[in-house]
Length: 92
Image (cartoon, rainbow, N blue to C red; front, top):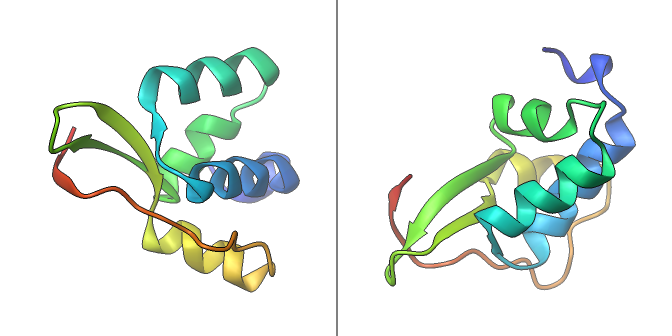
């Protein structure tokens, strides 16, 4: 689904929120599906490769902003400082 089919500001908010710090997958899904239940913000961000689910070294499922997500934030001057990504061993 193209980004124009979803509210771009909400997609940016989601990517920025995840870029601030890795979020536990369950927390991220709950927060965004609860606040935007009728919108496809989460799905759009994931489908476009802006956020990604990873397993940490400890085995926790985390959501992070991808390089594409960080680039989108840079283009919109919304990159949080400092943007962090977890040490991950493999994609979930």
